[in-house]
Image 1 (tube, rainbow, N blue to C red):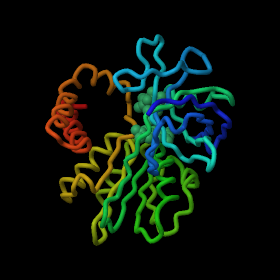
Image 2: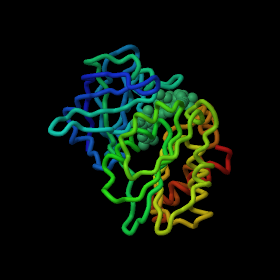
Image 3: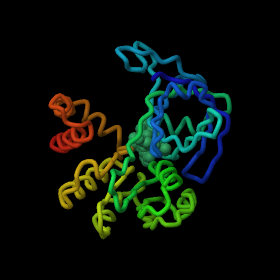
Image 4: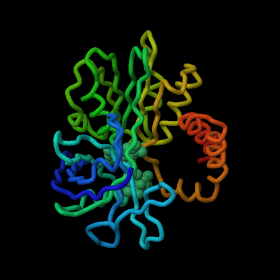
Length: 292
Ligand SMILES: Cc1cc2nc3c(=O)[nH]c(=O)nc-3n(C[C@H](O)[C@H](O)[C@H](O)COP(=O)(O)OP(=O)(O)OC[C@H]3O[C@@H](n4cnc5c(N)ncnc54)[C@H](O)[C@@H]3O)c2cc1C
C-alpha cells in the first residue's frame, strides 16, 4: 500500500456533464486496487496554480499529507477502466457547479499530475443472490457502467438511473439483460433526487435481493432505511454509498460543530467488534439525530 503520481495523457469531453481523463499511473500496484467494479482511488489535486501536488507521506501506516501548506485536497473517483497490459487508467468526472475536482477536470492539460492513493471497493453480491438492484446518479454512472460491463451472463439486474438529460444515458454500455428505469431531470444538484421514491416503488422479484447504490447522500440514507427496515434486509444484502452531498459546504460546517458525537458512535461500534458496514449505519443514524 502506498501512493502513485499520475500524469494526464488524454482529456475528452464525453457530453456537457461528463469529462473523461486518462492518466498514466506508473506505481499502479502501490494503490492496491481491490479489483472490484466500483473500485475507487482518492485523487489529490495540485494547489495554487501548480501542475502537480507534492509527494505523499506515510505516518502510522496511513498515506496522506501532513504538515503541508497549502494542503492538497483529495476526492474519490471511480476507476472506470485500466487499459489491459498498461498502467493507463480512465476516470470520468461529472461537471458540476464548483469544487476542486470538477474545476481541475475542466482545466487540466496533458502532462499535468495528481497523486493517487487508497484503492477501495464495495460491490459484493453475496452467495445465493437471485437478483440485483443497481442505483446511480451521474456521479455513480462510471461505477454502474463498469458493473454492467463485468456482470456475469444470466444475472437478473435492474438499474435505476437519475440523469439530467436523456442523452446522459448514452454513457451506459449496452445492457442486454439489465432492465433500465431512468429518471430524467431531477437530482444531480438540479433538484431533489427521486431515486429514493423509485426504489420504494420497485417491486421486488422472488429470491434473495442485493442492492448497490451510488448517488447523493440524503437519498442513500432513505434507501438504506427502506431496505433494511421495511424489507428487513441483512447488512450484507446492500452496499449503499453516499457519493456526494447536496450543499456540501453547509453540511461540512454543521459537521464541524456537531459531528463529534457521531464519530464517537462509529469508533465505539468498531471497538465492540461490529463490521465497518454496521458501524457506518450506526454512524449515519447518529448523524441524522443531530440533523446532519
Ligand atoms: C466511492 C466514490 C466514487 C465516486 N466516483 C465518482 C466518479 O467516478 N465520478 C464523479 O464525477 N464523481 C464521483 N464521486 C463523487 C465525487 O467524489 C464528489 O462529487 C466530489 O464531492 C466532487 O468533488 P469537487 O471538489 O468537484 O466538489 P466539492 O468540493 O466536494 O463540492 C463542491 C460543491 O459541489 C457540490 N457537488 C459535489 N459533487 C457533486 C455532484 N456530483 N453533482 C452536483 N453537485 C455536486 C457539493 O454539494 C458542493 O456544494 C465518487 C464518490 C465516491 C464516494
